[in-house]
Image (cartoon, rainbow, N blue to C red; front, side, top):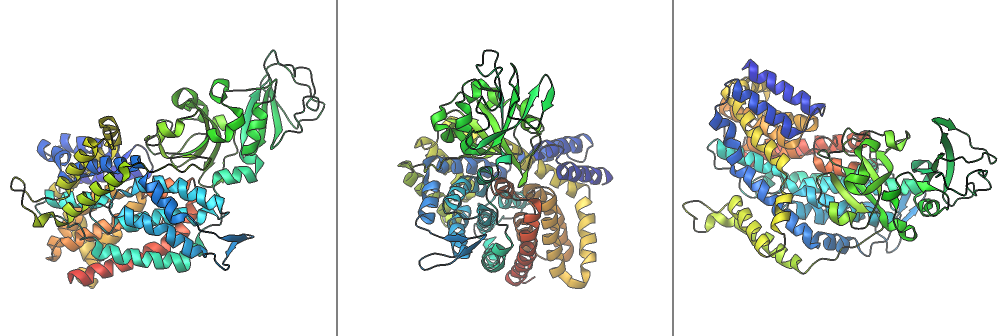
Length: 610
């Protein structure tokens, strides 16, 4: 027991402090449990053949195929088109023929919630975020009023069906592994739907008032010239050598200004008009996005990363791309300079934003973290090449581009609809080889049809699978079994039930829900679910009631993550583009977490008669 408990503590510490990725942490823990004899090889490997884990992998392929058709973008533009709003100062006013901010927010959230109930919510947020950001910017609405609700809307949808989020499938898979029937397609909706309704009401009446009134990083670059740093060099053959700053007309640039000069390792500042230029001088400019084009065409100056920045300067705005660094990106922990964007991505970093705060150090010295928002100057085709890259959560062109929905969109939606119907009502159909048609069969069939129909190529299907997520889930199944084998789950559950003994079985269910919520905010949703499920099983056995309400409590607690950007990936995706700070999530998310916890626990207790 003590070995397992020590490994469990290490898992929490490594995940909480982001020492390594979740797949590496759980994989290492699984190996340690195997070598210490807590797990037999069959138990350690059982998660890798689990139907829940395999279903998650198949759903990655289905989601990518639907993304390829552009149907999501078309839906987003259709819902957002025709909206008009006015802005006075920092607040929005409602005028004749114009919708108020809460109405616009709900209209934006509705399709996201619906789609997230039937497809993985992470790609939905990835696709909708740039569309909503461009729409809000064009309407002069604060982007920060919409992107957190976007993330929350996807969570509301995900907790209403079995396939809405991979966390539900993790719980489902662990139930099957322990000999239970598993969750029905709409089982979680018994608690998830009330949570979604309360969440909508909260955001409509109170939450939108707590959201910050802040523009995205690109708008801030245009408003504050100190956000954008550009580095140029005076080559040896430059005609500007020997001329003063004033003679070189470097004091009258459009949208940018010269802040300092580096000469032979010495910084010269402030810059006076009579300062003369010398070969090899490095000139540091600060300015707005629209000032880059003017600077790049200046005769006698070259960008430091000349090959990367050799793009059509007449259309430079079209080459600016916003990306959000993912938690699996190879550039993490590296400085912008060491990350080598030129050779890796054929692009150059021109601006950085972190958690809504300005990064004022030299651009090349900034160490990159998950969730950092970067503005890249890239060659044509960057968005197409890296749109689905695991290096970035989000890839969005600065210039608003509406991708057309392909003809295969209708075919893809029909396939997904059939998959949903089969998974929901497959129990009424004839069995296949003695097995009931469930989500695994439906997802496998949908993936096969979409590949055969050339909606997604075999190469794209392989790339769509998030192996890090699958390894995390499979290894977490083994860790969960170790908690049961060692008696650790029983010890924790007994202590928890005894602590909440005055509240009876209701207190036990509430304890499981709240424990999962806490773990989710500290680590990740899938990891939290996998670790709490065995504890919930023991709590059900100890209290003598069905384990199903405890399993639903785990699924709800693991997904209803609103208070931090850490617990749920969609929160991290919108953090950079919305220029959100950590406190923004706390201010909006803590009241929502309290309300949804009370709602979810009440719904579980009433529905299952706990």
